[in-house]
Structures are given as C-alpha cells and as structure tokens.
Image (cartoon, rainbow, N blue to C red):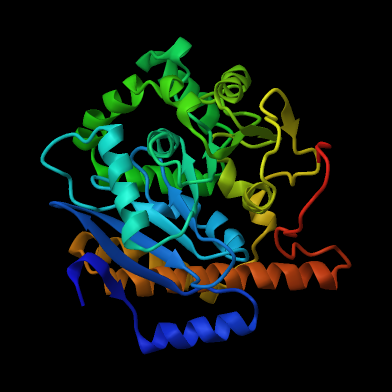
Length: 369
C-alpha cells in the first residue's frame, strides 16, 4: 500500500465497527496519512457511508480530539475526516513556520487524495482561516462551516486577543480545558509561538468576499475571541451566509453543544442558500445548558478504559504508530459511547426524555430555534 494512503486497521476494530453499527453508532476510528512533499496530514476517520463527507480542521496548537463529540453526531449524515496538521497533535514540526496558505494547500491535498466529492469543510478558530483560504480558491467546494472565526482585524493585538481568549476559556467545560492544555504541551511553546504570528496577521477579511460556497458561521454566546459584532461583519463580507449563536457556549461551541452544532451543519448542507441570510444573527434558543456531565454516566470500567486509551493514544502519537493510535482512539470512542448510552438508559428509567441524537431533519423557514 502506498505510504501516501497508509490506512491503519485490524480485524478487532472491524468487528467493533460492525457491532457498533448494529446499534446505529459507528465508534471505529481509522487513521491514515496524506503526504504533500515532505509534510503530511494525519486523517482520523469515522464512518464510510452517508450522503456527504465532512472534513474537520482544528485551530492552532490543538488536535482532532477537539471534535471528539461533534464527529459522531455528524457521522449520522456522512463519513467524518478530522485532520491533525503539521506541528500539532504529534505530527512532526516542519523545517519552517507554515503560513495559513500552506496549511490550506495541505487540507486541499487531503481532500483530493481521499477522493472526496464536494465535502462539507468545517473549520474552528485558526482552522476557519485555513478553510477560508482554501474555499476562496476552490469554487468546487459548495458548503463551508466556520466555528468561532478569527481574527477581528479591528482587534489584531496579541495582548488583547490573549485577554479575550482567557475570558472565553473561563466558560469552557473542564474537558475542553484538559484537551487544550494536553495539546499545547504536545505542540510545544516554540512551534506555537512560530505559528501564532501567522494567525494574528492573516487577513481573513480580504478573502471572505471571494468565497462562493454557502457558508454557515457559528459562535458561542460567551466567545470573546469571536464577538458578536465581528461575526456580523463576517456575514456582511460573505456573499452567501447564515449566522448562528449558541447560548451558554464559548469558543469551543462544538464540544459541549455537539448535537446542536451538528444539526446546524447538516441542515445547512441540506438547504442551499437562495438569498443571503448574513444580515441576521439567529439564536439557538432551545439549546442545552452545555453541562457535559449530564450527558455521560461512565462506569468504573468505562473510566479506566477511557484513561488507558488516552494514555495509549499519546504514546502511539509520540511513536508515530498510526495503527496503535487508531486502536486507542476506537477504544476511547467506545468507552464514551457506553457512558452516553448508560446515561440515556438512566434518563428513561427516571422518566426523563433521552438525548437520542441531533434529530437531523430538514426545516423550513428562518425562525430562530
């Protein structure tokens, strides 16, 4: 098999995938690499069937684990490919600091090498810059999602952005804080500090008007990094857009509100924009409270499995062992799904309404939820 498309798998994970599918949830994770010159992108995939594929692009310093809750919800609609970019998530640091354009070219190569036909491309934080740069040059991409777009050119100052990030982080779930800190340690201060100026100076406002794709923009209510007035300006600059705000959420809105964000993404893909809607910021009024502890009820075995899987994932990442990494990610996904299923059973037993997924159905009209 070509090194360009290394695909980690095993009979055990195939059996786990088949078993999980019988319950309607695919917890099998596969890992492969897509190369461009002396660089590569690590692609973490859930599912292989569905209407349209998703490509998820994380922000500065972090890994595809940031999408650990969003990806399974999106997978009800199509396969999900979450990317780990050079310099982050244990992918080797390149010899020079990559620009946003170079990262965008890598994402474009991944889309092409995976053979994806018009995927829904989702970016978060600095990932929105990467997606914007790519979509502005790829009219074949018809559907884009920007979550917490950065950076407002009126506030392109490092100290100010650091303060805004801290304000947003205060409202993040503990799990997101843990994922961020772990990822930043793996990334390293040196590489982070080399890429940060690229993010701070990228003129996203110049490229937004060049995007022909229907673009969904999502922000959290407490996201000081992507404030309301900036998101409204993003909508003004985009030729074809929809704007949504999630109450109770912060910068990493797709984690604690994964089901709601997944529903918005899928509905956006299913309903092409006939008339630009970027002049109105919709509010998702029936969103959950974002309390992730209410979504899971892990048993001691689930907890041990999840912690062990995370440790093995880190070790496999450091070794560059994609097969072991895929196995560890699958085990972690299975433990999370087991804890979720247990919590739903407890809710049913208590007479509460279970959370049975993102309820993916087309909607009509523009009424706020």
